[in-house]
Image (cartoon, rainbow, N blue to C red; front, side, top):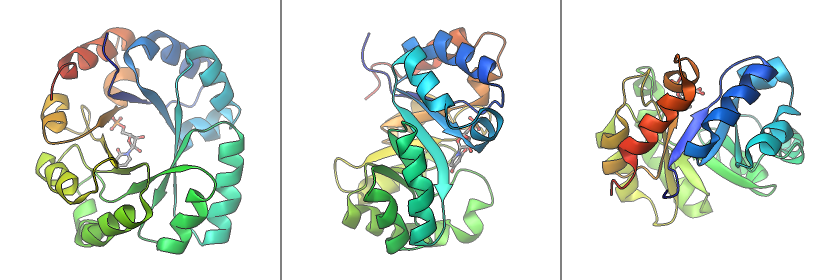
Length: 213
Ligand code: 3DU
């Protein structure tokens, strides 16, 4: 089996349910992304538990968007809890992002996947790409719902900076199409954890993108 390019967005509240879904899908994942729903529902200790059960990297999608000091205070606790990567907003400015990057691997949001992203974020994507290039972040978040934007963002990014794309499945993005457009990893939430058989859904998406270049 080749290395997976699938990231599970584990947006459930309950600890037991989260651990159960993580365990049965782990074989088909590169990493697990947690967001505020699971952190609020189960506490930061869920990070260690997910790592124990799956052995996978954990991405904390806390979308930090504050002044440098507050970003630092939050990021410190999240990395200490075992997160391998943190997702931070870039629009708050370089100093705020640098405060996170000083503590660990950071993924910068350069464009979001929902319709409203066109209002305020898309007009500044260019500058956010430049920021990611200058800071050489681990990766960026780009919209799987707009493969043409993924292609554009990839073309402007330094090689080596990963393009990570939420929006596959429930939001309408197509896994294979977005990988062909240049995504390194796709993020899938509801289409896996909300399905009748999460393991089977993860396997299907894994196989859809396996071998796609
Ligand atoms: O739509 P899904 O259920 O597959 O979940 C997508 C996840 O990715 C979810 O955690 C959401 O908060 C996050 N995300 C986006 O959907 C779009 C973005 O631009 C950034 C993060």
